[in-house]
Image (tube, rainbow, N blue to C red; front, top):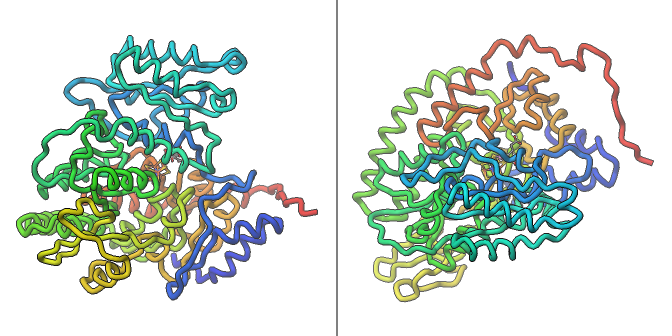
Length: 535
Ligand code: CFN
Ligand code: HCA
């Protein structure tokens, strides 16, 4: 099946024509047809038009669900009605394993189960009791408390409760005011979680570490991704001190500041932590991508450049050669069946970009992509190197964002630095989704269901990667939908072995003859069509 030749500009007009004038004007700014000859801009991280049916989640989802929840040995208490807690109970598929001390609470669901009485008379008493009860039963190393919408509305002071209970019990109790309505999406929750982690936990324990050490930031071990990344780095001789926060342990986070470098996989959810650790502890960070065979190798080579040790570089090249050959051998048969197929990607705040590399490994092209809640820099990229470290003797230039040690390195003016970097062939890069997308492809922010339907009808993609909210709408069109949030309960997809898993599954989906037998319900029976009221 050949994808139809369609004019992307015409499709954008069709999408826009769905809406009343005011909404159309807003949505137009969220849709870009790629033109590589221009530095294009896109509107992002603004309030969703009410009623439009977005895929976005809330602040609480970003804080408790995404960043804090995956810490395996803390008890995470949700202060709010039980529904919020149930929603975030093991639905995100962040994997973990108990450490030797046995503390492990990932599959529990702790909630104050707020009732009408608590809304009227206040829920602080109930929260105190819940913290005490959780402590008495589990004796965890630390406890987190997460506020849902009603808590902010009635004004329960969870920060004070956390402080009091911390003193009473002698363990850290950290409260997060991540009421669902804050901000415009999950993104606000990421920020609140980063701040809380940094303020209360990261940097508490100084320990001796040896060898090459990194932290993996913005890696949540969905389907075991972090374990595959760790396996590869270990083979190279690089130790992962802490992962933020897939399979994270409280103690590992406390000593994460001893690492030499922070690798940032999901920039959207954890850039705040990277910046704060750089400012306070002088730890440089670099954006990486472990999704895709070529992308993983590129990431490893960036690490080799950073550590700048010929022995390490040699070992990294050895690992790349072996792993690429094996992955390539296993992927080749699938690529034969996938070459030339097209994909659309609508997920979160980083995967819609990262998975384009993996599809490229399979010979597939991404024709439309967008994030749910990313910010402009995730689309447009930005110059990620405002400062660089300059080794005064050898004049080696390494990637670095802030001067960590004025004794050893000196700062130069940004223009000088950029010129030097370009000369050295190290950057002129802008790392964002848009610069990586081909001419004529469409980038669309915070997509709605109606927009998605038009894109499917016009472009007839071979696969659409999305989440649970639209998976089955897509599949009713006879097009397979791969969930890139929970991997349809599979994985890992990161690293070399993950790429093989992904190739196998995408082949199984796309080349399954069942799709051709599907006729959507709206083609078989008459349907009611709703039109927006414009007057
Ligand atoms: S694991 Fe991450 S990679 S953290 Fe973020 S932006 Fe969500 S939960 Mo769903 S799958 Fe998704 Fe990203 Fe970063 Fe996950 S693309 S939406 S908030 N996300
Ligand atoms: C969240 C979590 C989520 C949802 C997935 C989906 C996840 O945002 O609350 O919509 O399919 O990855 O579990 O993004």
